[in-house]
Amino acid sequence: MKILAFAASGSSKSINKQLISHAADILKADIIKDAEIEILDINDYEMPIYSSDREEAGGIPDLAQQFATKIGTADALLISYAEHNGNYTAAYKNLFDWTSRLEGKVFQDKPMVIMATSPGPGGASNVLAMAKTSAPFFGAEVKADLSIASFYDVFDVENGQLKDADIQAQMRTVLAALK
Ligand SMILES: Cc1cc2nc3c(=O)[nH]c(=O)nc-3n(C[C@H](O)[C@H](O)[C@H](O)COP(=O)(O)O)c2cc1C
Image: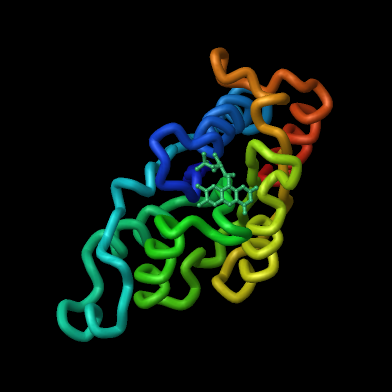
């Protein structure tokens, strides 16, 4: 089973990327042992800010097609969303907008588990709710979702793993939905 995982963040120090790496480790070690997990960096798909003028002038950049192909060749998706002002990060939204110009069903009927974390008490739950509500319109089946609040209180950054046993158990339950 091929799983494509990424953090919807443009930060090189992304806490959502740290979370997704940990989730990938758990998935492979204990849940889907034959999983082939690719962790993609959305910074490798950076494009000019979307505008209809740019699209008319130059078409859709190849990077959008490359991102869509990555999704298309996966059996399932694992995404962790960073929240900026209650919304998607500009980096992810731009990638999503360009990709949606190829095919409205950006997620190409893949099952997915979605997560979100932030340093604050909200746990990026606004963006997670937005992603969950909109997913069916973009051809995704959200199997489970998890918001993790107060990232630095519950995550051991040095060792790259959740130190809170209850939250780690919640993460295992959510990941098992990909089986
Ligand atoms: C412009 C900006 C807006 C933010 N807005 C929110 C917000 O609405 N909700 C939230 O929980 N955190 C917010 N944060 C804090 C982010 O959750 C925090 O920077 C987190 O590290 C982002 O995830 P990432 O490290 O994976 O990129 C904001 C941060 C920035 C820089």
